[in-house]
Length: 310
Image (tube, rainbow, N blue to C red; front, side, top):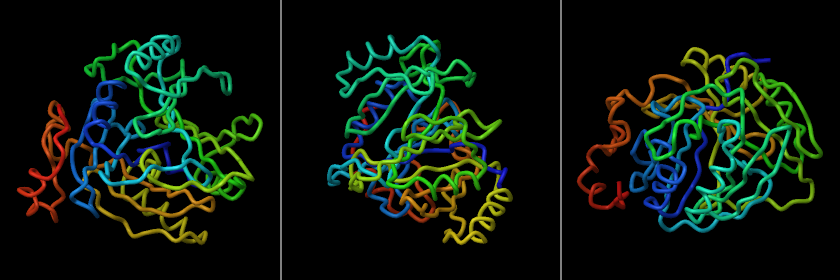
């Protein structure tokens, strides 16, 4: 069993409209946009990062807003719900705030002894807030949500799978342990992780497969401290039979990718070098930052990319 992985690093999803996406995460949810850059493989498309003040691993929600993308359709083989952590006793505040903002799909529930509020993102994204009294992470408090109610980071992701057995075995190999179960959901967690420690596996044997599109999660990334730990994980996964990409420089972290038995794309990302490598912490996410290979496209991209309405 590996011990290098410390929880979630980021979750990357797809959207249709960049301005709407930016408004939802920075205004409605009160997160900080910590990076405004572009997709490495499609530089005419933004890659937007939303997180806490510094973009701490375990707090970073990222989006590719493809203007012409079709609507995603939920199903198995994907991340079903991305769950954020909020302080105990704040769901009334959040339900009122989301209602006032016109957010749809609101539903109160309780799972594994914790109160939750489900809701939909602008593209039908499966999102939820959970009250977690044990979460002591500092929030971003300059996004219009008071610090006492603000999002702390991720709590968990839920994987929807036809058969969860092989993916559960993989997660156990990655250092996760089962801590609870309820109905068709098994809860696994990393001990002494980074706060974004939980993965739920929801088994739905007869469900249709997901059709990716706007509102769908593209991949979920797990955090390791540095490149040395990442190479250890890569070797262990390859020795177990997984097809893992070479290490890829993503400017703010190094990444490796592999497909899970249930169809979900996993990434393992380093905590280094961080989002302040090319911007002062006080000004994260303000300027358009481009990967080196796309710097020559700046004049075109500054004309082409949709203004975010900051």
